[in-house]
Amino acid sequence: LLMPTRPFSVSELCFLVPPIEKMGTWRTAFRGFVPPGELPSIVSGGEGGRAYLVIPHERPEGKIRIAVTCLETKMDSWTARVLGYDEPDITRYTRVNRLVNQVRRSSAQPEYMVFPEVSIPPHWFLRIAHRLGLSGKSVIAGVEYLFHPDNPKQVANQVWASLATNCFGYSCPIIYRQDKATPAQHEERELNDVGGIKMVPLRPPEKPIICH
Image (tube, rainbow, N blue to C red):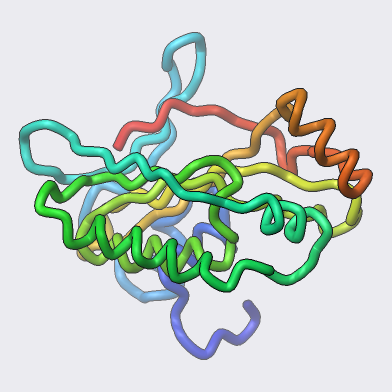
């Protein structure tokens, strides 16, 4: 952060300098130009007092197509993540990539690709988001558990959404992350049985209404 060798991408800035509504300021600082379009913003007055997170996005008229995936995550992979071990399933990355390529080549051209909860390793997500984002597609996925930096016995369960936009003058994804507030009963029990681990949010689970 003190001396980057290249300007950060928009998706990288989403992890480094939240909140999302400040992206325009940081983008100007790192890239040296003022984004030409409407920028991400927070608007109050939503349903039940909740805020709106508005991500500008131009899309053709017509039905919104969503690719809902059916992806096997073996119990060995889940256990390895909880215990901090390496991925034991050597076919998993290939299977995920095959699924992504099928969606990219699909004649239906879905705008969103949705993965199940706790199904994508965090370090794979940005690659998937980048590949689909080049063609204007968005990705919503439950990433594998994230360990708290100050407590190895606590994990967070997050959903990450890569939302396509051209508000910076070109097609790129903006990453939104949201914590699961409380574990499901079976999830709480299994985490404790496998590693004596508790699920605790990394940050307060804000739940804005996302407009995209």
